[in-house]
Image (cartoon, rainbow, N blue to C red; front, side):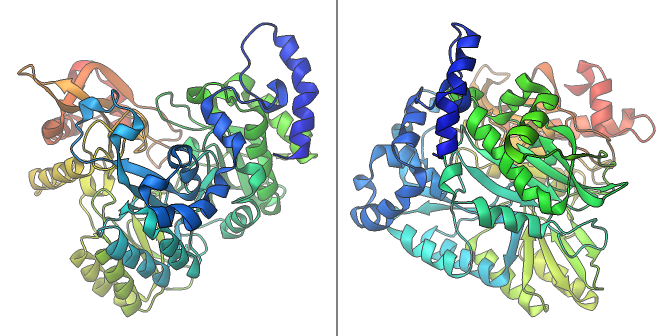
Length: 573
């Protein structure tokens, strides 16, 4: 904890708390002081999550799972990208009734942090080999540009870190109450359309601040996104802080600053500060925003501990004022809003690079790959004259630097790895979270359920495909890791009652959500229809039915979201 934070907490904080009267403190360090108000805050103050690495390497990896201190296991391990995974055979109906130690297995999910989604084939091959040797071949692309592995034993973690770090990768602060991975445009530096390459800004943030002990105890997670591409390809509206490239009429190309976005059970879209940041100001603005969250964020109740709740209470005017006066020491220029995105942000298909070569975006099915496929992909990319690729915030992969005359050969090779550069619209638009297979919070299966639905719908629409691009996001619990409120059709996992009166895995349906896109100027959250739920094995029937109704009932060029918000409830059931 920094000295300036302690001083502010002891003086000014006490006065502000007195002004609030008898109301319970929120746990804001600069207002209420730094005394922990719950067990989660206590363990973070007792010992930084960053310190657990030494114990993993020197004690737990040697003593095995049984030797791990419970507070480290359920708390500090997250600071190094490690969560215990769900024990097989525990059905979703018991998720909320069992304690974490009753749900967990003696294996871990390990999250490899990939800032900006930037990978070399050497790095990809290392991840693939780790998956094959230590993770039973598991590998999932996330919608935060990371790769997650499963079935990891604590005994193997030091060797995995050694291999990752040897090629410039790691797991530092991949989870925990810290600055998580920085989302970046998957085509940064190579697209012929981008306004600016955000890679220098991403590098400065990660090099200066990731692993900084002063930022290793935030109220909760802190998510960042930066893009210089006009497709606005980093889901900026649902990040705690985001920088979106715009052209200032006086100062040129820089970034529009957004704050306070997040989904989960209380979704809130981010808001513009109305401020323009020059490229060389971005890291300092980021640092200011994350310190506001550290010092003023709500810590007493964990379900209120995201930045979005502070922004909701403060508003953007006060937030910007505090940022500029207390943390930056100067006023940012006012700036213009981003224009409507120019195209899809998933970058699927073949696109020109600024150097005459092409990049190719490919779609796995709901982000699921494997160590063997990742290793084979590294070989395939190198065979086609490249050594670079990117992950995306849409569970996709983008292969860079392909000679134009090698494109079809690459696409054929990708097809052989079940990575389609010309996917059906339903395969392209479907993402899914980890689900009950590995996640202790999940209630239903997601990956296999979503894959079955994709394949079934591809058969049903084999002759015509969907009437328009359609996003289908499948989530195993209410926490919205798969962004259900911002999908055309978002499915929130729960146990439901089927027509025969049986309790079965199913989903509540959200309709008509979406982020800024060529079809909509502004992001918006989906609507729910009272009582509208589908069983896990009824997804295909429902999606086909509502898609055909949309095709028959839309007016002019109406998007699915526009149609879903316009029509009566009965049309959507």
